[in-house]
Length: 325
Image 1 (cartoon, helix red, strand yellow):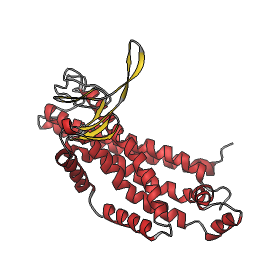
Image 2 (tube, one colour; image 1 turned 90 degrees about the horizontal axis):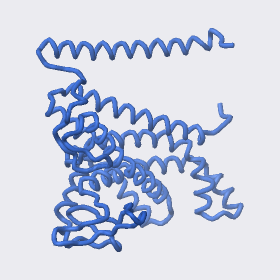
Image 3 (spheres, rainbow, N blue to C red; image 1 turned 90 degrees about the vertical axis):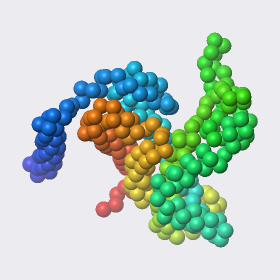
Image 4 (cartoon, helix red, strand yellow; image 1 turned 180 degrees about the vertical axis):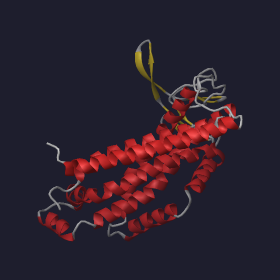
């Protein structure tokens, strides 16, 4: 049976949540009223209308005849399309760099430190523009693209890779082929997509490296000595003993960095990648509904942040120590 003492905090939280929701609704209502008083047409009734513009790339094909709501959905898909690989790069590279900063090898430790200090202290927008310039100006043209691996080439037009396609004979691997007009076949990743994905991943990796380093250093030296006394190798000590204990400090701080990465993806508008903010800007110019477009962007980023926080908090519960006061 629920006691009044346990019920009181729940009621307080519900009351605070209701007050915040009421205040937000009052602000939105007042803003829409002021816009109508000044003769500015407002509302979200434009979402079913034809957008009148196209989105050049992404998971969801979009043309000018489709509605605005689907344009926002395509922009959201492009945001996720860039953020997810960037998260993988940031976590994997950041973990390696964090471990490298603690190894006894002076050269490895020094290179990792230089990477972390250099990328942490240069603004992300500057790094994004630098990467985009390198991809679009310093690389060769598509017909002279650099062959990295069989079927994988990199040039000013982007990165081309083999890609599975479904035909009459089932699934086959389509290989890119060079023609007089560039490369045809396979899959192509544009310079804009490569620039934002790499910039987000490499930049965030420098912060993840410091989080991992601090988490590892929080594990007492006695744990390492005990593991080595049992005959474990250095790699086994790190993988089986140190990292599992360090996760309880790494995961909460890592959550903040992942949230920042997703929100920083909005900088892709600076290089023309059609993510959510870019689609919102185009929709705002086409309809004059700046307030509504900004509201949609805010709601989407809030939902993404809450989903990431929920997933990371669930994982944090698995890594947290049990039985500590």
